[in-house]
Image 1 (cartoon, one colour):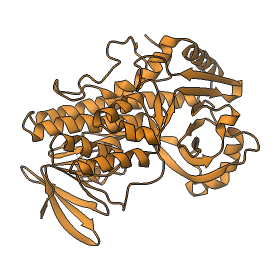
Image 2: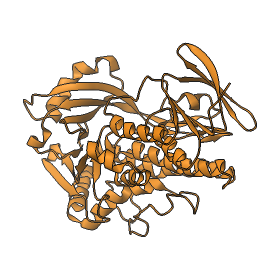
Image 3: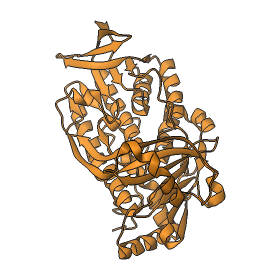
Image 4: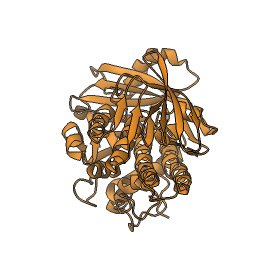
Length: 419
């Protein structure tokens, strides 16, 4: 049996990598394992919200991420059936580096974090898959497989950051509660100069049949086009239906090049608990949401920061283990009340069919575009994913710049209700 230090983290996506980096920066010994041979190198999630930018600034990696990223200050709402486009701009709220979002491939910014984690002393092991675990009174014993051989790793704590199909979660005595939508999303990465056709770097298309998201992913002109289709249709034949969808979403006669395309199910689910003894969950291993609004990535990275802070305090003897139960309770509250609630409302708004409701949405979009105060509420909404940082001494305790702002009781980013 090999000693893996204070914390063993399973999964080298952004949640696992930034958990490892944040823990290592405070003197915690960390081993990070990943079943795959390297960081997944597809662009995948690519939008860093202002609250995530603040995290990267605190972790000391923001300049390197900025070198790879596209700064974006505009967002467009398109309602093609009504011939409407509403342009929203980041308002002047907090100044640099906050009044913007950054578009950069997940593999790129995670790679920056991984290099810094290694420099901070994290033991990183690829091609190492978790296959089992058990707990003793003061350790977690993980059974892993690497190079066709099995071995055991021992750590004081284990974090499952291994995604929506989490092996860690499957080995815990928890349920994964919620629901699956009756339609799926198809995510495509394509090359096409969308800026020539009235698109901003970030776009939300509201249409009951052809709704979707269009966003610039990288400096080389790669764009993400995501659209929905009935989940009852066979997933293996989605490419046969793709041209018809693109005919409705893309400019007529557009000469595009598809880099990649894949369908995926949409869920609103969370584990019944994010803690079982010495095993904890974060990110998609803890909860999954549809991607409308970017709540999943942002909320997952905030899971990582809050957990790394409280767990680090426990390891150093500065906090009682009970704070880890508070972590589970608070992050589940943030998921259901903020992340999932917003993503659900954004998705329903995108796909509404009732003409009267769509007219009300349009008036709301117009208000968002024309009223600076409502615009501030929209762009500040993701700060709610920070939640309670649980410790007065937390490095994140004062990071929420929106505290004290009159945000009202918005149910989502695009909601115009301020009651």
